[in-house]
Image 1 (tube, rainbow, N blue to C red):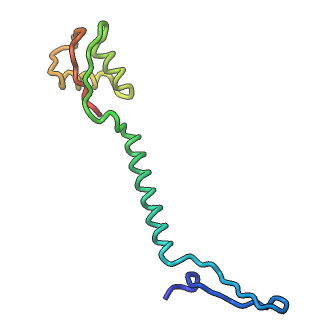
Image 2 (tube, helix red, strand yellow; image 1 turned 135 degrees about the horizontal axis):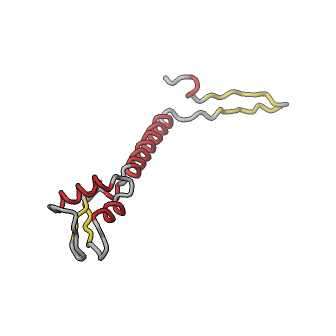
Image 3 (cartoon, rainbow, N blue to C red; image 1 turned 60 degrees about the horizontal axis):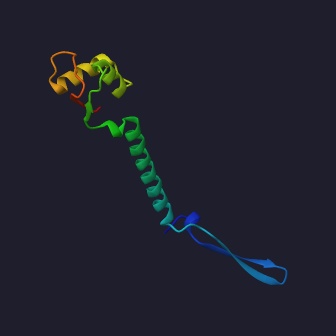
Length: 115
């Protein structure tokens, strides 16, 4: 049996000469679990979306860049990884592209690892 708050109730009230029946509207017992499941689902989806935004979902894979005249590894690292230390990113770019030094040339293709 359901608790008293979940049961439908009715009572008769004498109004003047007429008897009026009043029914209290009580939610059906299946509505509460369904609402809880809906709220839990929405919270889970919102958490996933916020996690993707916080970790930068768009920069997950490697990116290929063509070196332009005047570009250096420092300028490339600073522009593609603005929140990171360029020195660490230069080392990562060098390792990913098997570079021995810091010299790059216009037209050269570099792979920038994603984070």
